[in-house]
Amino acid sequence: MNNEDQAGIFRFPAVRLTRLARVLGAVAVAAAGAACSMETATSPVSDVGGERAANILPGTERLAWGLARTKATTGPLTASARFTAKGGTLVIRELGVTLTVPANALPRDTMTITMTALPGAMVVYEFAPHGTVFRKPLVLSHKLKGTKYDPTKDGLFGGYFTDSKKVDHLKKQVRISEMMTPFIANGSFNFNIGHFSGWMVSSGFADEM
Image (cartoon, rainbow, N blue to C red):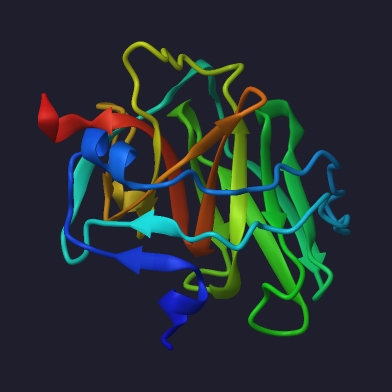
């Protein structure tokens, strides 16, 4: 089994989001409610349900619209914590974002994880250490309050990008190489993360216009 299988990722040919929504089941996730400090991590409320998220766009990239915030961030906002095998949560409370690390998900005994919200109008984050592959998928949860999400128009999904050079803040687009199916519950958008570095919440593909 390779690292991507361990991280809970399937690979299959790219399909349109509307078809993806019909084919895939919902991803079971746990949205953590407790924030961590900049030095310590709290235990997650519950573990990830173990179901695998979809991963598409193998070997290619597509332009995706970034979900817009109601108020742009003027500078990068960062949270960092040291995690153990017990797992925990990492929170940027003012942006409504939580990263949940399940128990036994780390590739080693302890690890310091950093989550940075990139400045601008899009819901876009970078994570470190760069290139880390996890034994279990982490869960990124983002409150829809504070965004311009329109359920009648937007088909939200999670998108992976390799580095910040893929982010076009002026056009509000990101060039992504992976797409993750979401689970929306209790006013939050959630999706699994099997590896780092950059993840964003997208409102649709820019190349489908």
